[in-house]
Image (cartoon, rainbow, N blue to C red; front, side, top):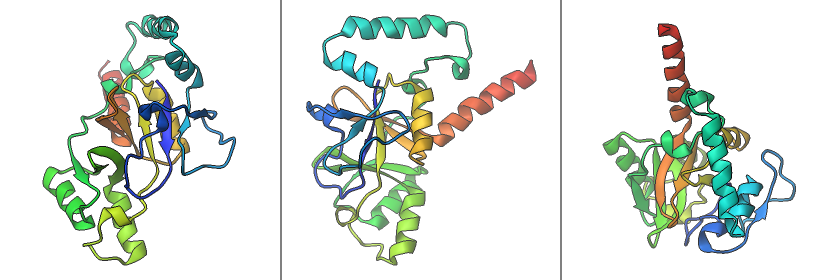
Length: 213
């Protein structure tokens, strides 16, 4: 259920957090950075769940999930103390290789009417980009549309697992000023993308139900 932040960097190899590659990662508090960011590693939050999952305490983790579930039984989605991010995210359908150009990325977004794309390097997750960031990069660098993504420092991005608490993820998105996060499955593959629009839709629907009542 942990949430990770990957440092900005070029899409060379995988930029997924170390936990998805079987290596130990350090812990940070939810909203406060306790040491300088290190481009060579990733940072984890939700340390209690992370420790339980990696120390073989699966029963403790399952028990915690059951308690969350029973506490939220019968409540509206947005009011549940535990809401898995898999219940509100959209599938991560579109990806392009790091060898693609900025023009390729913009064309794919336009063709499929999406604002976010997964960037891959040798079939591994190498980054997450959005339309606003691409347009800002073009404006700032006055660069060619034919610039390859592999030569560009892509932005930092958040990753979470499908069972991550959506409320906590929202707080981390705000803290890092990111409008999207990538959901990664147990194989280390992109399973979905959750955006600020998904949260707006969730609470807008809640407001509509309250109005009808």
